[in-house]
Image (cartoon, rainbow, N blue to C red; front, side, top):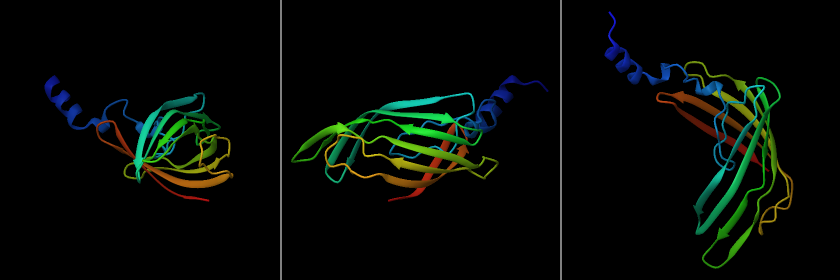
Length: 167
């Protein structure tokens, strides 16, 4: 039976099965300082991500612009990540500070690939360098490690979470 309406209804009802979904095999953009994606970039490609953000926490408003992230694959499962210095303005009720944030470099290794309910998983080892000019920032080299997990959900939606430690 050839019923185009039924086919369209099934395609809309089950978008995770639609051609081109495959979110866990393509790089997923992420924001430095927010949740990092677990899927690594395919060999032969280079991924750039940039933007701006605003964060409100404990009476402080921080505006960031730049947030440039570069992801370069070393193999099918390993990539180098570079987080360039964003320019930030930090406002409290009393004072205002502005300057560049620190430069960071990381290596991400995709340990598990997405299959069924099993998430894509990556170990991310990162080093923040004391290169910025923002007043009140750390003045030491700061290593960290994160375990990133990602699930593909219906409707071209992916859910990622990170758990990590920072020195």
